[in-house]
Length: 176
Image (cartoon, rainbow, N blue to C red; front, side, top):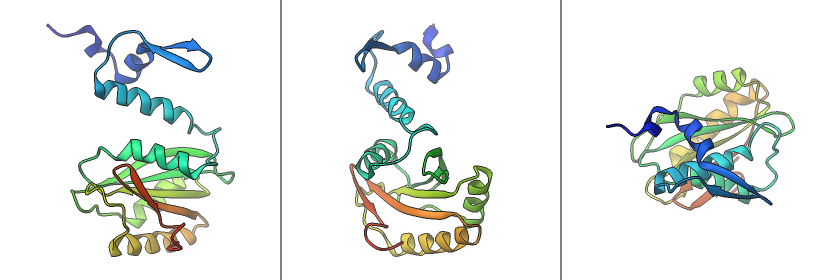
């Protein structure tokens, strides 16, 4: 016999599990497994990145991205779309790859940026190896995307590479 909770979409079930206790504290309505707890934490963090939120802390962004991508067993290339005030419009995982690479298509990135009406973006991808050092192909695709997006006046603020709980900012390294 199926558990009745299996009939609910994940987001609805997550809302019913989380009870606000006041003073910024929460409690769970029932015991949950590790994966459900992970999803609950991730959805709470994502609430902080709704459109009204502006990215003001590089460290907070890195923690969010590590939580989002660290467990992936394959390479994922994502975009954080930003408006002209650097408020988050959306986060979108655009390309999935293998354990050591993902094909990224500049045309699709440009189309998605325009459809989100983004003024700026932050690119992010993970290295399932756990080593966040930028490869030569990471540097090349970053340059291609900066050039392609420059033609339509979309700024690339950073390309962050996540490896486990560590991350590297290509902007901080002067690579953008």
